[in-house]
Amino acid sequence: MTWKDGFFITFEGIDGSGKSTQARLLAEVLDKQGLATVLTREPGGSPGAEEIRALLVEGDPARWSPETEILLFTAARRDHLEKTILPSLAAGKTVISDRFADSTRVYQGVARADLRPMVDQLHSLMIGREPDLTFIIDMDPEHALRRGLARNSGEDRFEEFGLAFQQNLRAGFRALATEQKDRCVLIDGDRPIELVAADIAHRASRVHK
Ligand code: TMP
Image (cartoon, rainbow, N blue to C red; front, side):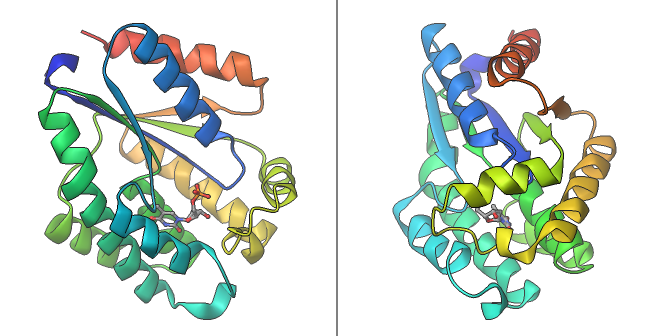
């Protein structure tokens, strides 16, 4: 596959890891290089999925069981895939998504509960698509959580689970980077934003054919 056929890049990491900023900065770099780039996010990225997002990221941490979360995130992802990701890739665009299926594998499959087999089954039934390249931003959970909660965005349902939860997430993402090393690149996020961005742009350019 060349980038002319459409290339699918995702960013993953714990809450407050800076991945949204890095996704935006990479989109700017690729745009400047003349690639048609679509920057999108999960949960969300299509009108229907954005409606589901509000149910998931706001309110009482205990409002959904891990199993119900898997269903809601997968429903949002299916709509995002149908309406935004697949049509953009078919049009030859580069799609950059701030989170995708790896978040469900780690948040719902490892940190919220030990449900990875259920996550995998639903993924193969309803999604069946992996990114071509995934950047996992790895960083100190204490630092990330301070940054995330300081934003006071009203979208902090998962941050409210606390530090131990974020530490489990970090371990889950690191394990996933090893498990799926063909497409996953672990990035040291405990560095200044510009250095992290330059590292990511360099690594992305190495797979650019
Ligand atoms: P965001 O803060 O990166 O926009 O993501 C929203 C929250 O949803 C974040 O705390 C991570 C969580 N999340 C999951 O738990 N499972 C998922 O599949 C996705 C996409 C996000």
